[in-house]
Image (cartoon, rainbow, N blue to C red):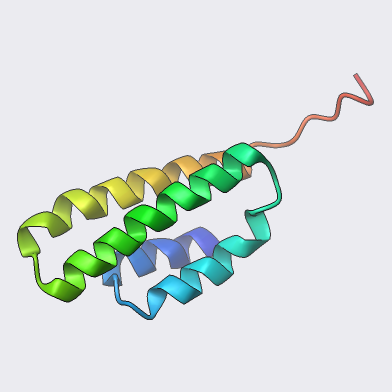
Length: 90
């Protein structure tokens, strides 16, 4: 299972133990760019919010927050998969 498939599975399960695993999975992308680091932070904020909502039993909020976390993850995946173009060899 690749990194983003595992992150999607963590969004589906949204348990407190998933926060550390998500951090560990995303750590390798943190230094790519400021934009990527910001996207990771945004995803993690939404993921932590989702975990909080699931843990507190607020079912009415789970679907919209899960959707937001998935959107942030899709944005992050797109940023990470965009090839870096070298300006040294135009």
